[in-house]
Image 1 (tube, one colour):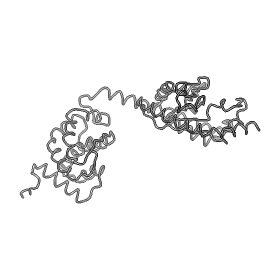
Image 2 (cartoon, rainbow, N blue to C red):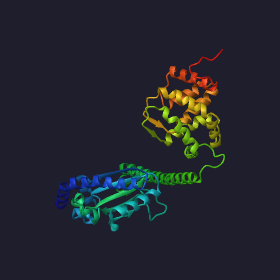
Image 3 (cartoon, helix red, strand yellow):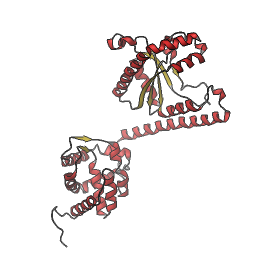
Image 4 (tube, rainbow, N blue to C red):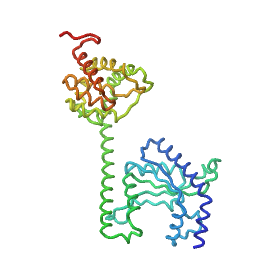
Length: 359
């Protein structure tokens, strides 16, 4: 027992060094993933606490932990991905960045029992490697090992809940609870695979491009707005945002309009293309009018979709529709709504601004 206390006390002296290494590793890993355009949920690190280290050594006498160097997870990092196949992508990226201790790396996704469901994660044990150890900023970290856990968001949720609510050792868990947790783990595994399938099919459809009479949905709209005619219309509207210093492209902003366009009878990309062409001059004229009142300094790419929807609602004399679609981006006062409706009526009737319609 005295040797354990001595080992734990010696770790207190190097704890700040491991913490500093964790910060460096976070920067390296994020830069590597960003450079490879891998989308990930989070990258975090933690240094093992003294109580946790004491329990680890005490609970695993068979491991013969006699030195700090023999404990590979004093510093632990987690890379949480969105999709199952990104775990292997991240692994390959990190293999190129660090020197792996293959003997201590563990792939817990590969179960010996095909009927068993539960914790699934890839654990890599590594050091910075000789190339980085030669650099002054990494010199003090030479030889320090760290563990990187790579898993999906759903695998992470399972691990966190299981860790907090399942007794240790697992043999102490009542059989009915073990059955419930196994069932949940199986469902999460299916969900992970289905999310992967959704992404694969989504990517496949985007690569196919727009087909004739393609339905208007989140995927086809993102492809449609890349067409030159649509981009030209957006470029024509942008100067009306006098204070705009830049342009913001957001798939989420574009997709907001789909429900309203469907409600207005635009169910296909061909119909959207036709309505934009039919209302081209109206959209430009209405946008020029509204541009006088815009304080925003960033132009939202896809603004013409919002303008088109308002025009089509005005054709149907539906002020509530106009209010609903504008409300997605702005707070609409009664005066503002009345002004919009009046302007839209004039444009639809092809009445020049600042004139009063004849009765």
